[in-house]
Length: 290
Image (tube, rainbow, N blue to C red):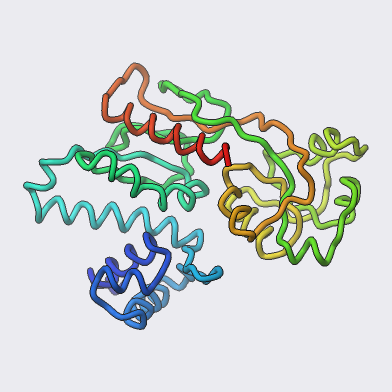
């Protein structure tokens, strides 16, 4: 494969951080069209879309999010090689985060770096079971809190509720919870529509038809695109609800049996890792207070 240039990778990284080609261009001293050209070049090389326009922002696709983590790690490695004094001045820490959370987390990393300029925080995007060591200092995972040879501390519990796009709701008006049975219900294997309907006082079993998404980020993208109504986790849709990209047809919620956890090697206590855990807990809490 033809390797992309360093300038192209830097343009991709900047566009991902700013979610804007214009802002990326200002950072790198390039025009909007130059950034756009670099991104198209990278997309042609990989044969996949890396960004899509949503309102006035250029949002990375699922593939773009995965690639951003890899490119940032690679650029960081190059910086450490050619700027050894800077690399020695900072303590590098790598946190594994699953891709569905990264689109929420990446725009918030600037606040952590401002609070802790002495730390060089890197993200490793992975949906694999927790594999600490080999350069991974800790992980954020969603689950039941039990992973082999690890200590897992709860970061945030979750609730589940229906969401859809404003356009879908306008085209499929619902007045009572039972009216959702006439809608296209988007499914996730870990989220029970039957439990939500029970909480809403509707006698209905688990839907057996309708699109099913094992990746929660794809589930939310489908809801935003107007494909139907999704049963979503609060954290995964908080920003989209605030921006008006998604709406809640009803306020009824159910508790999620799973939660977000900060996971580290069993018995390991590192002060810098504690700082990351504390910051993450505050970020989760701030979103759930909105």
